[in-house]
Length: 461
Image (cartoon, rainbow, N blue to C red; front, top):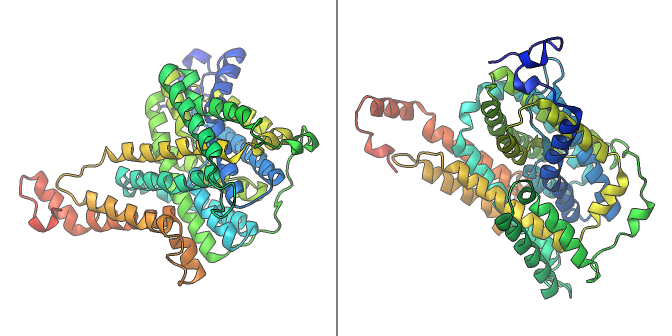
């Protein structure tokens, strides 16, 4: 692995990852990273806050906390903290969609104090298992990560539908045609921007859809920005805004599974950036990056934020621009940090109408599903049981989405763990992958195939 030279070394002698750029260029490139990931970052608190039935002011607080934590974690990942935290690559961190459904379930069953208590516990768990996970990454191949990512996207589409149509089917304005038309118009706009523009403009199509949709929603009477004027320009929410954290076992287990899924996401993205920048990662580098994710759980739990992961959008931007300096990501982290200190901005975003947020969320959640499917393309299905593994895992994961009360007769902890599509799908695909692909019998069969022997009939699907 390429080693970073000391700061005193000539700029030209350093690896491109460690080279600083002229201030003006550094600022513009950092801002571009923020714009590319901003919508995805703030969608998480918007969706969670709406589903948890929080008021606009509280959702605004969550948005600011989300941006603040994302900025801190991005700075940690880009610059590093000693030998324990930060992958030291041009990566940008933001709130992961993985945690949305489990957090909604925990909030409805135990309350907000349990949401953030379990997040802190998961963060500590992440810090403790970062090194072992980095060494055991072979147990989380594309078969596992692709299945989980697919289920994450599928499970969240229902949340987007609830934002568009409303949460109460008995309400008079439930699924009002004008609301559906507004959402459809936003989706169409995002598609057209993607089709007929290129480069940076096409990457911020969702953000443009949010802005345009909100402007259309104003004359429809769907917006209420009355709380914006009362919000401060500068400020930060007090730690533990919802009270002393609580740690129900079921909630902690569920969030720890979320952390493992987040590790799987981030691992793939960090390895990809390592290849793009010409700085392949060692297990130690990867462990420091994963510890950064764990730290986001601790920071998020204390500061009312969210668990963060490395954002794939920004990985794609690194590949597109070919800019390898990690200081660009550090500037992006600084910008996110500043945005998190502006409560008025959080209030503006929190006041966006449900159909507008739902339409943008629909596109983004479906995109997550497509990313999972794309990941599964790397899996070998012929002559293996991998198709069965994917099928059973998706089926188990989607059960609580299709039938939310399916576990109602079981204890609360079963409802929280099993009722999360992400948690149940992750457990299923991980265990099935171990059973079929990491047992002594399977390894013997694979060795026989490598030697030219026929695969035993019992091992074929």
